[in-house]
Image 1 (spheres, rainbow, N blue to C red):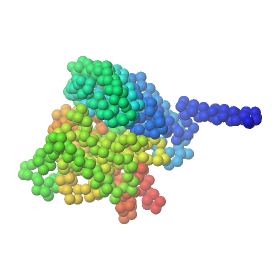
Image 2 (cartoon, rainbow, N blue to C red; image 1 turned 90 degrees about the horizontal axis):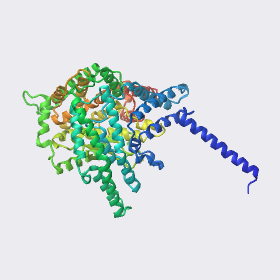
Image 3 (cartoon, rainbow, N blue to C red; image 1 turned 120 degrees about the vertical axis):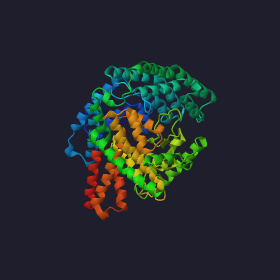
Image 4 (tube, rainbow, N blue to C red; image 1 turned 90 degrees about the vertical axis):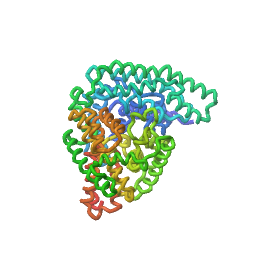
Length: 614
């Protein structure tokens, strides 16, 4: 037995450790942490814990056995919105209090990135009720079921119980949304009429299905069927509870949201631009700053778009002439539209055609992954799949999008292709789409960012649209370096059509929100310049209306990355060889998503190091 003296010493040591731990935790939770690295993690943890849906999507907490968040949906109340704004203001002040002179280069970069993000959010505080929480694309009425079906994991009994718990919170979440919609209505923020009409049609369809036909029920049933641990009676009981949750909570919540928009519809107008909102011009300037991470004015963005449209149109015309595809008196866009209708470039508009398209997309991803090895030193460990956009949302969803993998490796990255109408999927445009959404586009950038080591967690997940979308568009152009269009002039034409699509966005987004174009003019211009099907163009223009400025980020980001590469090539000359290009691409991806202003600083530092032989 230990002596009393030793015992007293041991007790004292434990007490001292507990006291030190308590001081550390109090400092970490309630005050600015002593360590800058701990502060970075504190900011991320606060943000993640405040958004249980985000925490589920990134899949990081489960690695440590923490799953409590998987039973809850986000808090969208006005009080939470106000508290979040106050917290971000405080965190920005905390960040600025750290001495920059003692920081490592990595810490300085993290400080720069986090400061840019927080400052942008603080600058946007006057407009925090200017958005449309319910809209035809990513509105809460679409995102909630989409999240439950595609992000919430049901791999055991607890996952099933958490799913039911989340269904039980849909009513609370939607009531908070209605609270926010009422506040927006009071200050004059009402969606355009077509938005309300679209969401009403979609919600009525969703709420009108019997429980057993609701996609939330059918998805739950399919996941339960795969759980061997469940006895048939347990599975039946869980399905009964799911139907009860839908009939007793989810569907009534949709009906309350429907009732709100039915009363708001007569108040809506056909003015689509945010210029109509309170201080709308300032709001749009802020959105462009936030989305492009530049200080370009709306007029500068508009003029850049017009110049790029003219350049790309000339390049497409040259290819069409070389292939003898441009008929007399036919414009470039008209030729593209005609080619897109030709049977040689189309799949049958049936299930066989959709399966064939998905198979071809998968083959493209495999080939692109192999060819990427010549241009990248680092490839992501995460896998990627291609899937069809869920049918319950495909009518208003964009042509394609990417869902990131879970950080714990339980879910691959997914390239979702919209196959609602196979006439919208001409074969000559598929390669470019597979590059952009998949490899080496979004999948490389996002998955590699998530896999970075030695950086704060926020650097792995923080989104900067111009960088992320600019990278994906840059990789479309990089497809030429990969040899993917060498023997495929029509594929190269598809690449240019996609680039034209993004250039036109600069014109129509600023046209709608800055120059006060009606949506009909924007639709006509986009059809005229791209040759895309009008049905797809309408969905795109309607997207720009509810997500102002976002579509401008693609082309601006691409041009900045291309300019950065050109700067490096000019500065290094013959030293910019195949290995240097690999290193350049790895450097671009090594910091996670960055504001374009910060990216330029990183590129210039890399060029200096290479010139000095470091």
